[in-house]
Image (cartoon, rainbow, N blue to C red; front, side, top):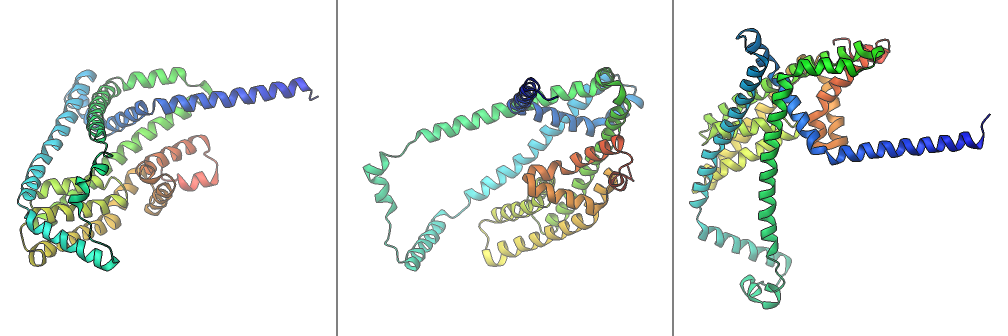
Length: 363
């Protein structure tokens, strides 16, 4: 029999549940930076698994020494990537220093006059406007100091993030067996085998996925580099590497990389004739990049991605597209790993479901 006491207890339990869930979500929101560090460290650990296995089994390294070696390798790799961009920055700065500012100013004045004539605007004397005390008094130069402070805070946060990620990665690699044993103690006995099997399969598939992603980026990098070398682009290695890294973002990244390559190419040719030198070479490089993207989208990416996570290429495309529409660029990046985890968990806990059987028959 339903009484007022039962109803009130149900309402109180519902309120308590809502408050508990809200507090958990709020707590997770507050520690979102730590969650990002953990996710990045987990990805590095998955990528490093084959390397760590080689160090332990072939070279007989201890777990601690293998973890130290792997983290040092990641740090040196990151430093090497940063040093790659130094020649690019220097060369682009030199190119900008050769820019004919007087000619550029004359072109801007002509554009301004054409704009005024087209829209029937009166001539605006910007120098006299800037000398106006009413305008200059309203300028707030504190924005400049705020901008500098924000840059310094960003650099400090980035440095703290790197230290945290490498510290967490070290213990993920060193003590992963201990983590697995402790997880077995915490997990409920009735679902322990299913959860352990899910974790093992997810670990295996995601390791294959991230290694496959590195292989795909390497193929794209080599093709980009060949295109840039053929057309005599300066700093071809660095530009190809930067554009290849942008390919981590499905579909959108290659477009950004092509635009970036075109801009850097035009900057490297400053001082040359626009119609006979700058424009033709930029167009050739853009066409070459589009051909590389066609090869990657239709050959290397579907094959490598589908083989690494045992999914059909069309399945991967649809999942990535839906995630991009729903969650944006971040959703596109994490779509395949997250979908792979869901498939593994579904197969372990719902093995007799017909939809699950069809989607997970290759896992």
